[in-house]
Image (cartoon, rainbow, N blue to C red; front, side, top):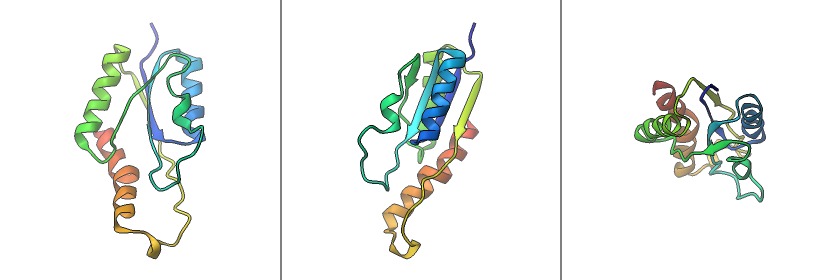
Length: 123
């Protein structure tokens, strides 16, 4: 019997590499990628590869404690068990000075890249 692995992280090449490795080692895994809301939409993002090679793609709103709980339950239900969680905490760079950030952008960064990890680890 294989282990149930949840891979959660920021949509990035590192996230995609961790997912690929989980797929090679275990076959089945669940993945939840947080999209970079501050970057312009890219063609061929890391989320496009999620779900291949035995992976199950799950949605997650990192700013919500209910969404963190729902993510863990969804991973357990889809994989039948959850033995390991790999969190890829690699926030993207903002590429501009803080004084040029809008309040909504600051809120998104705090929710997605700080609060969300605490909610998920708590679960």
